[in-house]
Amino acid sequence: MKVCLSHGKQTLRIMVALIVLWNLCASSVNAFASKNSLSQSTYRRYYSMSSGRLQELGAKWLEKHETHDSALMVLTILSERKTNKKDEALLKAKSLNDLGFLYSYYYYDFKEAYRTLQKADELCEVFGFYTLRPLVELNLANLIYNNDRLYEPFEIDESFDMYKRAFFHSV
Image (tube, rainbow, N blue to C red):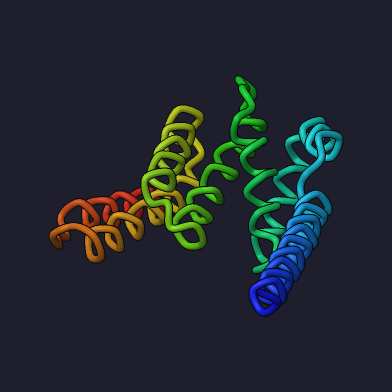
């Protein structure tokens, strides 16, 4: 009988130790998450920045490998702004082009990359951004080519047509 009681105490101690360890791990994960999460005030601060400043930050953070999430946030804020002014629309088109690059090459979200690049191409067409449009179309062509080559039955026609459009809009 004494052996069973002793064995039960050891099991109880192990269970208590595991529960304490579990709670310590959970609290450290919560502390890490709250330390590294974006607060409402930080988001509002970025949201209130000018479009030019957001584009500047997004381009800067896009270059650094460890800051792509920050670039995604500020470029998304900028790309969702409504505008009828040509200079603001240019910044929006640039941010959409950068977002397309981020989505495709770092997040592998090809559908979202295609959607944002299409929006950028439409803005370039509407506002006549003739210097930016070839870059957007080149990104679209690369996206279509890579997506077709990796995930779809390989057909070069659509990407080749986009490469031609990019070339003709650049000259």
